[in-house]
Length: 476
Image 1: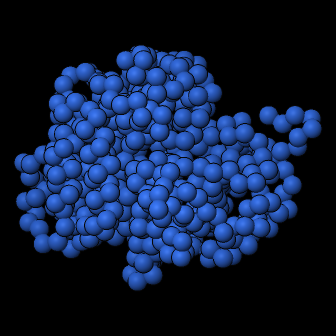
Image 2: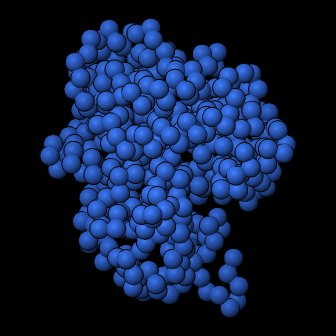
Image 3: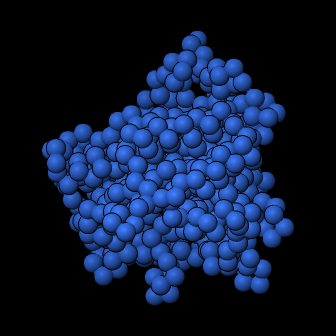
């Protein structure tokens, strides 16, 4: 924390929550970005206790990259921020490496000083090409543009809530050290909803939930999950871009809190065999310009409107096209095991948790569809964008698709083959991005045993996109 010679910003948690909820409401209300830019810049200039602004963006696989800019430099150069794109996996080649960052001023967060250090705030950015146009590999920009167009043309707002599961293991950097240890050590062997107050898992959950709340997540509930040492912290639905950003922040908070406790928060979909894996069930609804939930119909099947069922049909129709985006790692295909409530069946159901899409009990406000086959290591912006494009694609489908007997691929190679051959993916992402993404996933797959087998293999951890770095990659 701050030393006597350093007077850096440290805001109490209750005030942090107020600031972040206000900023969140400004985003939901679509306050013009130019107005918020002026407001934020005036705040930064006037608040002498801020030393740096953390600017975030994602690469093609969904890793969160963060650059700390000195506040004074940022205020004078915010419209000319550049970085070396050739150093980011899946981005530009060395010969055309310079890329720009355009700050998304509405996506601004005040940070808990005890978790992230005093004197810092955080803001998301969009990746731009040299000429200032959107970079094709920046999925956040694609999702943002799509959502803005839906609102401008049809008055539609997409609402999202994610249920993100993870594991807590003993020791810092347990995933990076898996190459030497060959195992993960659980901090708790308690089960669903069961842990003693003050035990290591509960201590982690409490600290992470407090930080979430302070960052405006609008918490609902948190608890240990079914598997030992597994957790889930639920928060309320919000607009889809905000929700997608929150997925990255959720994982960042969890990793940071765990590290402070000499633990590791892992979002590998199946880091331990013999127990349930981790998912990221994604609840989706769409509201009109009047705020009415268009997915609700009290007289419809499962309480859903025809509009919602058409959305479900689109997702199921394109299930195999989407699979690699929703299950983006070698390890993710261990989770799609029907013995552990795995959502690998290409169908929709109100009760069967093995279905790719489930219809939760809802009312006029909460009616929604739940895409269950998405893993917590998916690129959130890319996956959400593709799901929305599939659901709103107006494909001609037969309602029998909802009771289909097909299953999702059980290995990444089959998923890559479906992804490469997909005309829908080429249209949604562009052929260049489609090829780049498939190449990245194939390069990882080729470093892992082709057959999953029963034991977790070192390579599927070491070369996982959320774990690997240049040093580990070079040790193949």
